[in-house]
Amino acid sequence: MALLDVSNLNVCFGLKSGLVKALYDVSFRLERGERIALVGESGAGKSILGFSIVNLISKPGFIESGSIKLDGKELTSLSNRQLRHVRGKRIAMIFQDPMMTLNPVISVGIQMVEAIRSHTPMSKKDAKKIALDRLAQVQIPSPELRFEQYPHELSGGMRQRVIIAVAMILNPDIIIADEPTTALDVTIQAEILELLKHMCEVCNVALILITHDLGVVSRIAERTMVMYAGRIVEEGPTLEIINDPQHPYTQGLLSALPQMALPGQRLNQIEGSMPSLMNHPKGCAFHPRCKYATEKCSNAQPNYIYSGISTVACYMVEDMLEEFSEYRDL
Ligand code: SF4
Image (cartoon, rainbow, N blue to C red; front, side, top):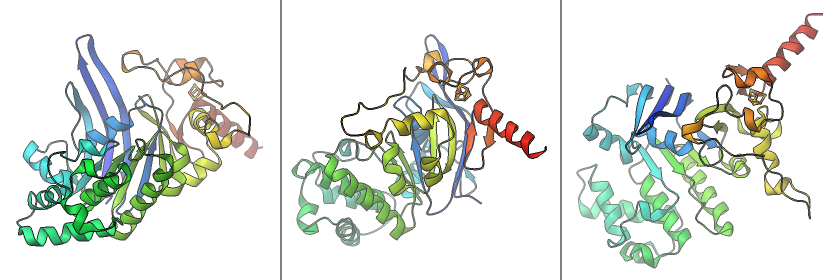
């Protein structure tokens, strides 16, 4: 049984103008200790998916249908009280801005102790010991001193280390990290990602890394899911996807990476922009931006097909596979 099993998840937003769909039939599995990346431009639905897993989508968003199982137990039917137990204790979240998690007027140490005591009947003294251990584990110098400090007294990188320590404090099964390094200095980003990976390995915690940067995933995630307009369009082993992307959108994301440009060359970019929730094109949502689009692309959504490298939703890949099989049969 998978640790997390999301199947046919559909999320909608009830707006004045009507119901708009934000996630389309999203399905994936996450095993214990596995690290996966959720990649796509902003507006692809990555964060909505992350928030949906812990049922934290803000109104007017709601889960329309589908299932989210943690260790076989359905999460979508849990009450708020039951979900509070899951959040933090079994599934922890790390946000882009540490101040979304840290209270600016309470010292780091008290926040960590309270995080432990809100889920376990532990004494303050024992909780403090665990908090100090965690601060040391995330390589915070002088943990005793940092324990007493307030969030604003720490640098951005140090705050994100504290957030990782807080996320790990109750030994969760899964961490969902939503663009955890976007707000940080480029020099510190790699350090924080490396630390996150290290902590997940040491504590056998599964990770869902949400990022717009396909360039960082090879260092962190074993598996990658590429999202476009609320749908997973390609999924497979990270290295295979990076070395031989099958979906035109994944190819576009890769060729737009700064490291793919030669010195003095302008960066590539995918023409056009992500459709808004209100304006999803019919058929494959990527067709207005896709140089391989044919008539059928604008009529109906392609189904998933295994390309031999990854699982892809694309007619072009489907047609290529069909052609190959015809040659094979000759
Ligand atoms: Fe492009 Fe068509 Fe494939 Fe969509 S289904 S990515 S439009 S070729």
